[in-house]
Length: 358
Image (cartoon, rainbow, N blue to C red; front, side):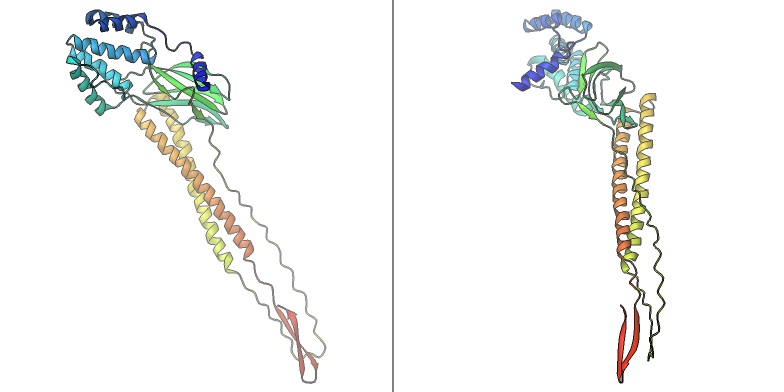
């Protein structure tokens, strides 16, 4: 019950959606009565009026295919059945009608298998200064070139939905925004303002936020600590022998620390390279999107490649920082051993004493 109320509330926010079309309703009655020429006239009147919601538009296209096939205009019928399957590849047409209608439907089904249906894809947002500045999408596949216009529905930082109309140029469309968090969906239209296809929805919108900044590890150089000067030794009275032997040893941990830290710095360098590649490619995609210098398929592939570069950049930078930090810890743990000193002193007839630091 709650879900039904939510759907009604969302649809109520867009009064321009589904509207009744008297000519389309009239055409359905004429088709049921097999008055095909009159049905075609009513369908053409409905199509000329335009502004139909997607379900009504699909009904109109399928009805025109049926009417033209029933009047033996098979080429025209196949054209409209192609449009139906382009907009809705899962629509069941085969076996739905008897008689001459089956032939153009079968041809349209084969065409749809080879060309595919209409497909829209959201692109990465444009971001600057920790805010989303632009949203965009590309028409990945549109074999009949049906998409001509778009209406964006945008919610910025949790506000209300706001519709904004735009145009589709070279298979892509964008909209300037300014928020920390953006939710949006898009309704595409043809030249007669009929709904063609949707990208996302009000219930399941596209959500864009700025990506986290690349992690740059800051390695603090530890200042050298001067070693204590050795204290002068006092020669004992009547020593038989006095030996002072400094023994200095360096832990192997320091050798390993240099290797680990070097590997970390190399990883940071690779991560910085991928980060620069990500930023430059995103800028190039935006420019191509605005000036139309690339196809929508190429823009999509470039966008996916840029995303992979960004993921690699963060991975290398984080891993490199961890290696550098580990090398620094090893260096501190592998310090020099203390200096060892031994002194031999006579204790009496036939006796010796040994003292010192070890």
